[in-house]
Amino acid sequence: MHANRLPGRPTFTDQDPTAATPSVLAALARGAGFFGFWLLLARPGTDTPSTPDLAADLVVGLLAAAAAAWVSLRLLPPARKRLHVGALARFAVHFVWQSMVAGVDVARRAFDPRLPLNPGYLAYPVRLAPGTGRAAFGAVTSLMPGTLPVGTGADDALVYHCLDLDQPVAAGLARDEALLARVRGGGGGCR
Image (cartoon, rainbow, N blue to C red):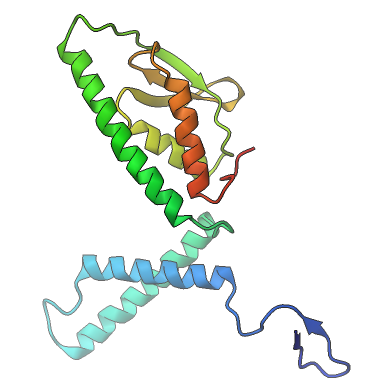
């Protein structure tokens, strides 16, 4: 407990007044990332090694990074959930393995006309709430061979074009969604 230093009687709070808020940490992290990206693109001081020019370039870069961080925080506020590194590693291994297996299957079907294809559309009822989680799910599943998200259908379900509807596509999507939800912090914003 820390006492507030206001005149009159002291009040107490559970928050540490010296602790940075998550939005300040997010602003600093995003600003540093944008500044690093700016450094990679602009390469200040490489053409003219003069110190005043370099200082002016760095000031411009810092201002651009601060503006980009501000806009970034307005458009995409920091999430309260944290990524789980262990779940992310499991998801990455699963994703690479599934990509290889599905890629071999698609190649086999493309080069062997005797293998059956049953192309069509599948409406998958996504449990992830609209926003970054659902967008990440759509992006990840668009990289898997044999399935491609093509839009939304009734009840806000994601519609996939599938190479073979006889395969357990919905079960695979459900497994991928559950893994991604764990990466994003347990429920992952599921409804």
